[in-house]
Image 1 (cartoon, helix red, strand yellow):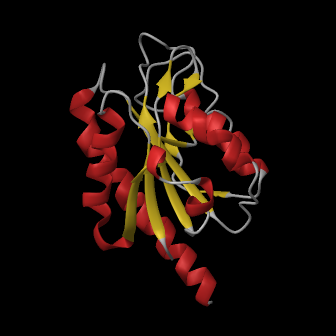
Image 2: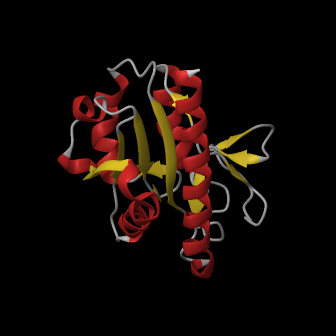
Length: 177
């Protein structure tokens, strides 16, 4: 499986998370791209995309992702896998916490992509999010809140990387079996 990390970052937090994730996943990742440097068609060439984005303004996509979204909408993502990670502020924007995952998933999920890397909501203080699944018990990706919980970031990325390795291993077994 060809795995790529694609990130968009305005202030550097999501970029740092992408770098940490690559370190955790090692040789499993064949490429890391800033979303401004890769087209939707190039993203489509990978089997698994780990998409890093932050929520901006009030529940909006980070600007670089907003520019790429129309191109993503035009492709059929059937057979591809996506996982989301990124930054949000659960205190300052408690009612739109990591909405960005939901925005991207609405496009990719409706276009046939499969989801990896859900994360429990336990330990996150927020009031609403477009990024909830499984009866609101999980986020559809890994939320990072460097504004309020920076001390948790490294451990969460490491745990999420371990979870992704397990999920990817199960996919490989299913493909062979």
